[in-house]
Length: 126
Picture 1 (spheres, helix red, strand yellow):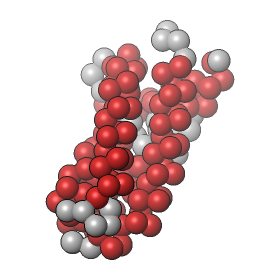
Picture 2 (cartoon, one colour):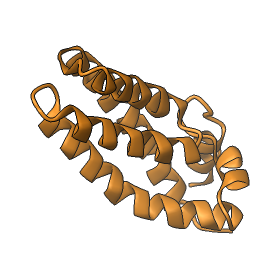
Picture 3 (tube, one colour):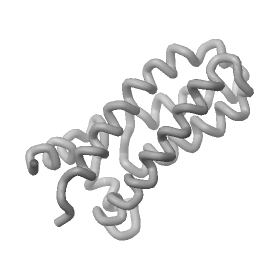
Picture 4 (tube, one colour):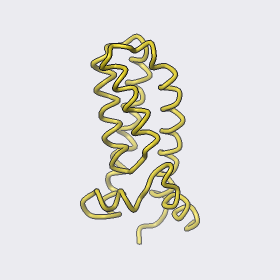
């Protein structure tokens, strides 16, 4: 229902659709298309991070975290962006032993972001 769309849009702690619409070509319809693609990409990135933290290859962790950070930035998903950036920085320092706690935090932030994106996608396009 439309209340969900409003709560998704008015929850800038998770995603900010107005900011996203200003960054993505095509405005909100563009954000909708991007969100559909990103849901699958995000799942793959999180699988990679779960697989590679803490015992994987730092370069691989860094790349996955960097990609997730960039995509989250498009949706103004600051919780995901900031946590992914911290994982990326630890991987760059070759300090993966510090990343399991950050991964746990990232899981929570990603879950909130995906819920907000799914609410947005579930609302009819105007």
